Length: 82
Image (cartoon, rainbow, N blue to C red; front, side):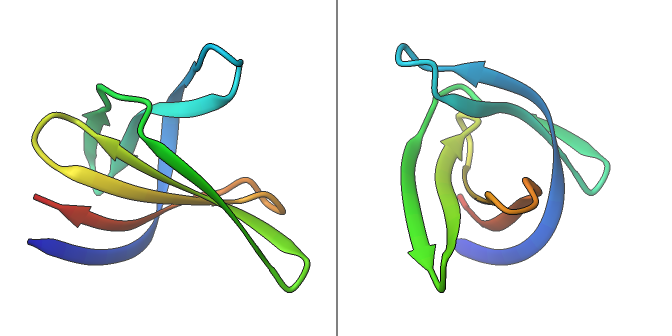
């Protein structure tokens, strides 16, 4: 089941892939901390001159879709699928 969220989250730890591309390792959302176990899938989306990064992450129980706008660097939790 997929639940749309669209709320800001705080990414508290970052990791790096082999090619030194950064990805979230931990986030805080509604008072809870979520630790991700995988670097996930990444997609860059360009629209109206702006670039957004979409990342799908997993904590082993659920899948989380995160979005980061390159203009302000803030992270949004788009959805959770369990």
